[in-house]
Image (cartoon, rainbow, N blue to C red; front, side, top):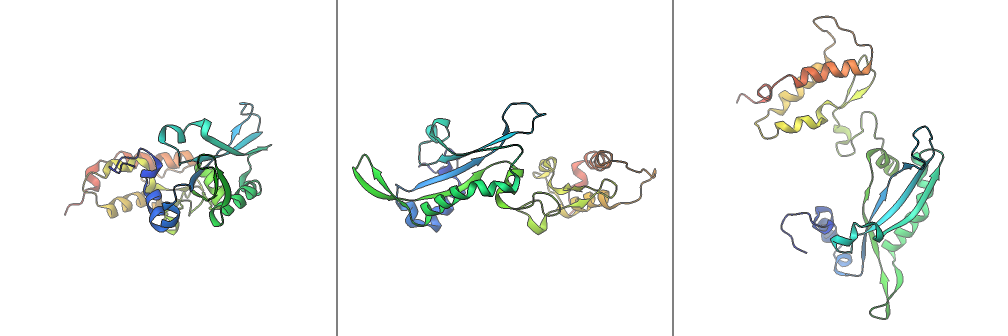
Length: 236
C-alpha cells in the first residue's frame, strides 16, 4: 500500500493505521477481515405522506482492492428492518444478533475453509467504523444529538446558547462559514466574544422583539455575517 499522504483506500486512513499499531497481531494476519457497517433508512414507497420506512444494514468488506470494496456487488446486506416508522433507539433490538456475531468474530474467530489453500483457518474480523447520518449516529451510540451536548467530539465543551425568545438551542461557534477565517491571524477569543454578545444581549436599539425562532436566528446571523474579517484579526 502506497503511503504518500493521499487517501486512496481506507487503508490509508489514520484510523486504520492506529488500529494496526494497537493490535499488531491482528494486523499481521492477512486473512483477518476489516469491516464497516452502513445504516440508513428510506421511505419504501417514495411517498412522504406515508411514514412506513425500510432500514437496510450493509456490511462493507475493506480487504478488497479499491475498485471493488466500494461497489455494491461486494456489500453484504445483513439486515433489512421494515417498520411503520423510523426505528429510533429500538434499532438495538434488531442489531443485537448481528452484534453478537461480530463480537464472536473479534474475540474468538470462526473456523473457515480456504478454497485456494484447501485447508481450514481461523477467520477473525473487526468493525472499524459505522457509516451513517448524524441522527442515526445518536440511535446507534445512544448519544443525544440534541440539546447542550449535541456534539460527541466537543462533549462538555460544546459551544451552545439558548435563544431567549425562540426557546431553541443554537451552536454559533460551529458554523461552516467561520472556516474562511482560518487563513488569517484570527483572535479566537475576540471572535467568540463577538458571537456571545449577539446571543446574550437582551437589549436592542429599536427594542425589537422576536416572535419565532427564524426571526431571532436571522437577527443574530445577519449581524455576524455583515462584519468583516478585520474585526476578528488580532491587533497584536
